[in-house]
Image 1 (cartoon, rainbow, N blue to C red):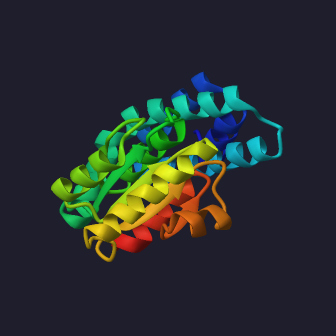
Image 2: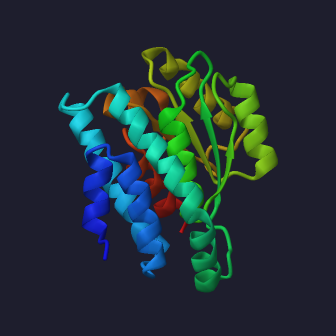
Image 3: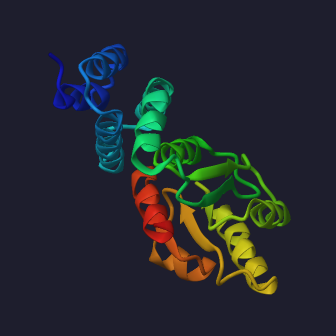
Length: 214
């Protein structure tokens, strides 16, 4: 029999083939898909911590993200079934995600988008290098509860601020929460941008959004 700790270790140690085998075995043994998914979240959190401590580097981040994507393809049908059983399949809320204009990094955004979807959110991903006007237009058309803005570079700060300012100009700021994410984010950037919260990893981002919409 497989166990969730074995899965966690395989993910953290970059043993992709073992992780996929364990994922399938755990499902076959009747382990809830959400329990498996939560273990992936925990493991990605550990990978992120190792990255911050310079024990891991960009290749490990990329590989862990690829493992998460592959696992998501396996888990999605099971998670959908579990959600339908639990709450009628209703979506918790609507989130627009985008990497802001001038930045093309999308690993963190893609992982966060996938994790939000797996946690019952209705997500529209606008991609990378997205202008302020398009983000606002899409958020209005989609009826977004939250706008998630991603950026890895310091040049992303001004476009993020532009989105918040535009929401204020259009009288939407009180209706839509703004979450900024990326490795450079901190309290000082949050204050400058005027967003509601900042996160430096996808797991924390999902927790923030669920807290707002539930």
